[in-house]
Image (cartoon, chains in turn red, orange):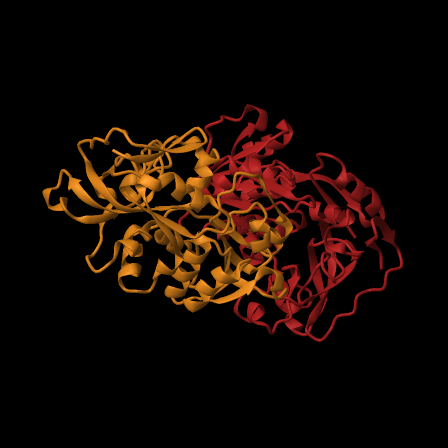
Length: 318
Length: 318
């Protein structure tokens, strides 16, 4: 099959990659549409030491599976394939299973190819009413909505999202869709306009009101200075959700953290069912983020485009 | 009156300090015994820009108060004197009231003198059964037990405290007293022995088992590298409570924070009633931490002793 493969720091289209073979509990899924995420770009820069087929955002169709009724179903997937037996897998979602593989990130070939395999229990069916160009956003929207799991105490009414890249915008749209008054702080008027059209307030970081604070602040900058900038916007007793994974080491002012008793929560993947529901009921519509569509044959160009400064979501059709 | 005063970076005994005068809602309290905290030493190094009488750990006797029944009572105090009118004061404890003063830390003379004034509602009565040398620890024990407020989800069964200084030991003793299996990681066999006698397990940091993890980790190192060292000991989905206030900027590995979805909580002052209860029912006995006792007349020497490397709790009697 054709697949976009990371080898060392090189991303290349392999036209003769072996098709993955499903194991006993896995489904074989044909990828109908995939997205390129900033994490893919970080992986190509050496993050996590991954090599193999890239990609963890997709919508596809089940070709073969142990459960006959799954065959032919349109699905998205929780990208964390846990062992299925440990406490984290049995009692929770396996996102912290120590033996987990992660689609296109840890020891498992990803979705920027024609086929993938995933454990059946990771699959989430998608209703026919959703277009591929909506469903392909299920994984990052699940991650975006997972921000809400970090604020256990009480529902925040207001939030600030720092960063107007793909993830920042999806988080802003998702929080707004969940009924939270959300302000996006960014650097790009064209990107902020997407959040504004979705009902968020927006501000250029250069024009930030120095007194602005919220009880929920999200760092989605992808920058080593993002955590500090987000911390400054957090109210006393507030929660700062850290969504950026940054290769650099990050410096923060712990005095503010202690004196204002801020909670900083690292946040990764979320619940795919919640994401599919939010897409299906229209509370989040991510299609304004689509920057370009490529065929997998042009996968290398697609990756370059996604890695170019300021790019929004690049989609790839196998 | 006599009082130990911070002026710039100089700590000196003022033998002729004006006695504080209580306002309408305040009590005048005679200090019977006070303790010197690492925060006092940080203040003398410029932290918070404080000047005035140092000290926020004390037990005293009410000399005069608006409520007649309070007169003559033995008390400790919540050191945060909020405005009493804002939402944080009305709905919570005023610890984050924006107009608050803090005893011996922010715009309010402290307890290393003969008398202090505090709002009546900050006072907590102490039973006669408690010795002054126990009650004087109420404030740091309240701060220690406040660690438990950071773990909202479910009670952790095990905890690791990094740091075997005064605060680290008090946190370890307090968590152990609350029924949590607690391991202290430190550098000083003599200090670790105090935790061990109180039922904690202990380990020298140099001999740390590299696989050791706990769902609750406390950074009480007071060091700029403490947060990173504590983070490495935190299980996936675990909570790291940051108790150290460090003047330096602190560097952390945010990848671990995000991938393992760690929650980092800044934690400051706690509930004084809970601390007095823990002292009274014997679940925490801090007296093994007493290093030396001084008269206020020797306050400057007491402060030098407290600031000397490795010192445990230095008490001062006015």
